[in-house]
Amino acid sequence: MKTEPAMVLRNPADGELDFRIIHFEGDKHFNGVQRVPYFSIILVSAGDGELKVDFTDYKISKGAIVFLSPFQPFMIDGTTLKGVMINFHPDFFCIFRHQNEVASDGVLFNTPDDPPFFNIPENESSSIYGIIEHIIAEKLFAGLAQHDLLIAYIKILLIRAIRIKFLKKTTSPPLDRATTEANLLRQLKRMIELNFKTKHSVGEYAELLNISTKTLGRIVKNHFQRTLTEIIAERIVMEAKRELNLTSKTVKEIAYDLGFNDEYHFSRYFKNKIMVSPQSFRNSLRNVHDSWLTAHALQNA
Image 1 (tube, one colour):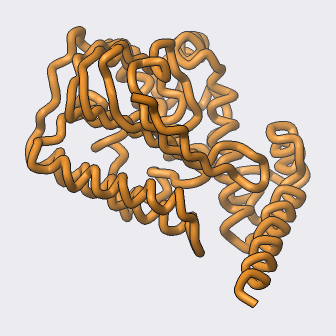
Image 2: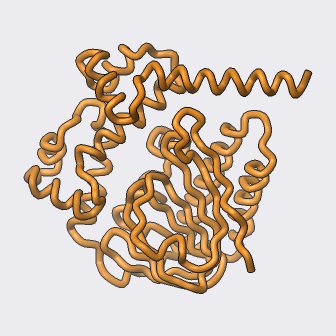
Image 3: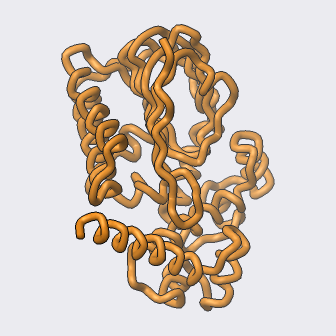
């Protein structure tokens, strides 16, 4: 059976992928090591395979739902697999920022004591698939406030998944035990999330984790194929983009909030990462928003 094409929503300011949903058959989307910059939710509706993530191998089959964080390396082998994958960028919806509303960090994503998936009981599958159908319908027939509605559905999906996981744990045991390095990397993710506004250097995180800078840098580079400096910078820039988009704070206020001594240093840092200044980034978002409002008004005139 032919799979449906991916449904994609992109950031109007920089063209980066914000959200997508893909129906898949087989493992062509996963049969090489993946390090995507998105949160990923993978729901297996048929077949079976092997999930490799965080130095550990797991068997997965029908009913498995997998939760992966940005740049978390993973791979899935399984030619008989069928299902749905949802990707969303942290700029679109960040689980850490919404942790007070949907406490999914440490429960669904970044789970230090559990595998990154669980199996949905048969009597609960209709509730999960029902939410996904709503997401697909909204993506196909976009209307007013589509962004807000998609986020609402993501929240509902995460809340429902948390409830199911707490009601009955059905995870399969790992084929290999997680290593010390995997636990260290989970701690590092948490440390960055808690401290990125005040700690910008590799040495500061090495000190927090009681490990040498050289060793920490090597482990991160081997696992993520990126340096820790790059990972910290991406988190800082992500927050900056969110503040520029969603708040009325001045560039100077945002700079100080993110631990920079002055707005000029922050502006150079931001432009070096995404090639435009903070103010230009904000202006581009406003121009797109104004254009959308004008087009919407003309359609309803």
